[in-house]
Length: 143
Image (cartoon, rainbow, N blue to C red; front, side, top):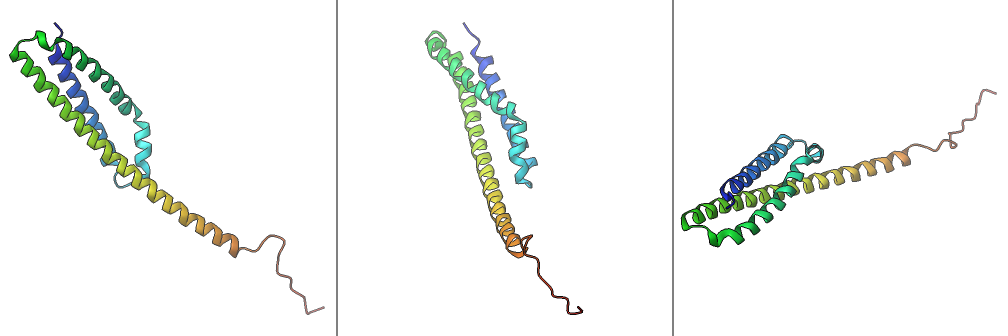
C-alpha cells in the first residue's frame, strides 16, 4: 500500500511554497510594473514547478482512485481531507496566477500607452527639425 498521506502533504506544501514565491514576486515589483515581467522570467523555475506538480497530481490521483477501495474508512477520510487541502491550495495558486496575469496585462497596456506617446514625440521632433539639406539661406548685405 502506498503512502498517499505523505504525497498529498508534499503536494500541498509545494503549492504553498510556489504561492508564496508568486506573492513575493508580485508584491516586490508592484510599484514598478515594468520589472514585473522581468522578475517572473528570471524566476521561471517557479513556473516549471507548477507544471511538474500538475503531472504529479494527475499521477497520484489516478493511483488513489485505484487503491481507494482497498483502504479502511478512517484512512480514506484522512487522505480525502489531505486531497481537499491540496485542491484548495491549487485553487489559491490559480487565483494568484490570474492576479499576476492581470498585473502583467496592465503593465503591458501601460507600456503600450507610453510607446504611443514616444511615437507622437518622435513624429513631432521629425517635423520640427529641418532636413539636413534645407538650411536657411541668408544673403549677406555687406557685399
